[in-house]
Image (cartoon, rainbow, N blue to C red; front, side, top):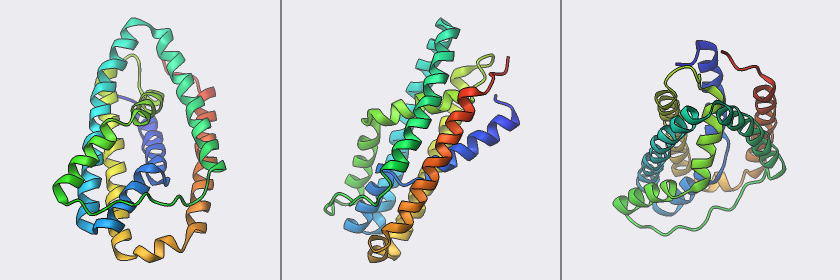
Length: 208
């Protein structure tokens, strides 16, 4: 497993990613605004289970990649750092409160199922996990196990934030729509930190 310092860095980075407003959070807000707290909670859990699909698939695929080529692993880590910088720049430049897509009431079970499908079939989620998690993996240990464990932590953090957002949106539906400037500033700050994290990882020397 990664060292304690690397694990702390991962937790900080994963938490930052989880709390940064993005498509997943806006999807949960839309579900909650349209169907209430119950549908929002069901959608949040569904998104979490959909994320697990990418974690398990990524763990197996990344393990095979590392066993095939150590250079490929290094290239993937560099690509991941650049991806974080790009994501930070995109978050900074696009900082604004997006209008949630209107979602009609669908019921608890359907909201749950659709949450799974939306996340499981989202290629951007798979690409993000494959770019983000390898930054914190020790290639000298079991890569697949590390990937899955770190992925589970990331999914748990994302789902926890989604659940909190659900309760917040259920309590103050109108208030969220009237305060776009707060989310703007949050996204700008998160974008700047992500750029800094990506730059740090890009120039950091790999252990071993």
